[in-house]
Length: 345
Image 1 (cartoon, rainbow, N blue to C red):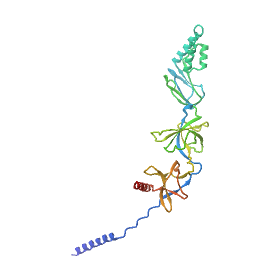
Image 2: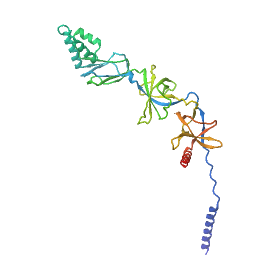
Image 3: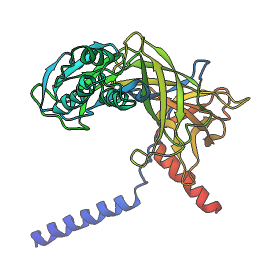
Image 4: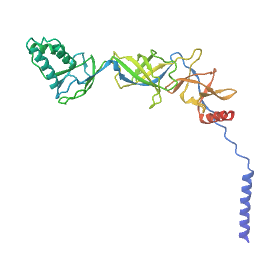
């Protein structure tokens, strides 16, 4: 009997506890956290966007020397990559039966009765040697000694830096093989890339500033040679070709550099700086920021992005004095904005 009474009391207490929980007032909800914002700042006069670029040798100031004849071997090499050479300077000496044959032909003509005065024959033999790369000094030596040689000297076609060497000593050479490359590194190209839409206002001849990645204080001016009229399918960007003066030897081919492109707003428009994270895109493709304006709260403001760099974006838009942009918690705001657009459509 006592055990039954005890069980009844326990059951009654449990029912009372459940009833109290159901009738208890709801717990107060925590107030939503205020959005994280940042001020909208004037961009100032020295406005530009930074791009990453790669230095290239100027093809118009680069010469590739290809073998004009075959050779049994490379006998000697006088210069190596990095050496500065002059136009006409010997880079390597080859042992070539083809060159010996060409010299023997002229020697035979010169040694024939009459000294090779047959109209046109002597001239054609000399022309063949010139096309093979023989210098006037070699032709004069052959004319004087009448002794052909198989030693063929490959000379630099221009003054500059020897940037590449093909065969090594002892290597066999075939006609058309690359012997060496000489580039004038006083004039270089820089290849950079723009995102579609950023090419507006840029044209050939626009001045830019280029600096090494490791030393932004050392700046040289360059000019845009060409804004490509297409989009690179691999990077989905627009290639930009820039020419720079490298007389001081500050840059080297294949090095990465920073390119500063000037930003010019449309007439009457002002430029502002906002955190790069504040810029979002609606589902209709329109770019903008969420601005905080009392007492109207938070609203979406369309902007034009004219450049990015160092965590900031340079934009133009209808900002008011005291505007602040939302930098955190943007996903719910974008979802709400897209929902409003869907309801209107």
